[in-house]
Image (cartoon, rainbow, N blue to C red; front, side):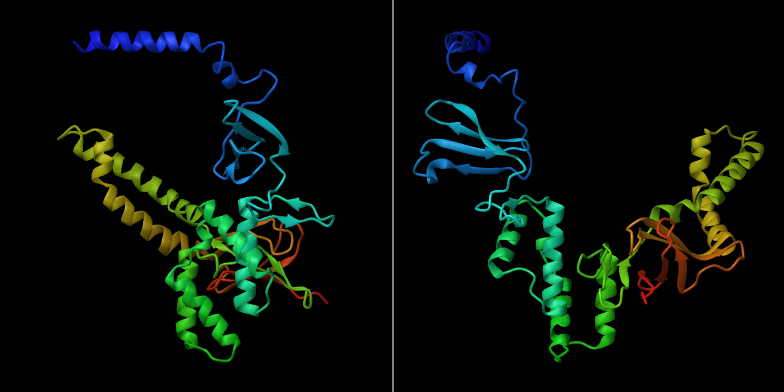
Amino acid sequence: MPSLNMRPTILAAAVALLCANSGTVSAWAPSPSRSGFVARTSSVMRMAGDDKEDVDKFQMTSARKEVVFDDEAGRFFETNREAEECIPDEEYCRIDDDGSPIRLTIAEKERIFLDSLQSYYITGRQLLKDDDFDKLKEDLQWNGSPVVVLNRQEATYLAAVEAYLKGEPTMDDKEFDALKKQLKEEGSQFAVDTEPKCYIDSGVCKVTLQEDKFRSNLLYLPAGAFLTIVWLGLGFEFIEPIVRLNPLVLAALGSPLIYNGSKTITEDFLFQEKFIAYGPCPTCEFENRVYFGNILGVEGFSDEAKFKCKKCKSEITVQKQTLRASTLPKV
């Protein structure tokens, strides 16, 4: 039987483990004074066979320590290199003032990559050398960053900007505006600047806000809750004597009427032409929100909104069509 055939195999495995308990198994047991090995997605693995001095070693940089596996000894060893130390031969590093490399996070590397692309294609200024840019791009590719992959619309947009700066436009203004609007709706990093930028010559700071869809949908809640209560009350009043229904089934039957009614009441009577945008302050990066539209017949912001930041009290102007927020020029 299969169970009888498995017993010798299990017995042999148990004997082998007991014999090796005093040998190699102890090498894999973590020391009480050391923290356990923690892997991460941006771990760097390297076969130390490429180095002539360390022939049979396997190296891995964890989130805390750099450990090396020695094939001859059959165990891991910790090196003296901390996780914060950057490895210039294996990843993109920033050089400090004293010449020491600095390890960057993935978000910081993505920001440098996008700034370098936008600066090169829009202003023609090169922020990084070709070798540094290639190393940064390769580093982001190995870490699975999506910003290094351009789709067709993004490539067309950057090419159109570069051609326009050279005095040889490849598309008219309407096509360019439509393409830029499409990229903004898709949330492209090249058409939307979600981080503030300030200009030294004028002192103006700008940033692109985003639509707050969550709070916009919450505006339908008062009308939806009111119509749901009215529907359930009428249902129990007129339908309950004829057919007894579960309240959930009754609410599901009236969901189309509740949905259409709450949408009509909210958009036509409560919050006309509603639109909520949010984003950081161009000056202090404090998160602000602005409402476009009317509330119960009271007129609010239509095409342009002007308000002051709650933290730094800077006056901000927001365009509804482009969601471009900017501060006043400093005198």
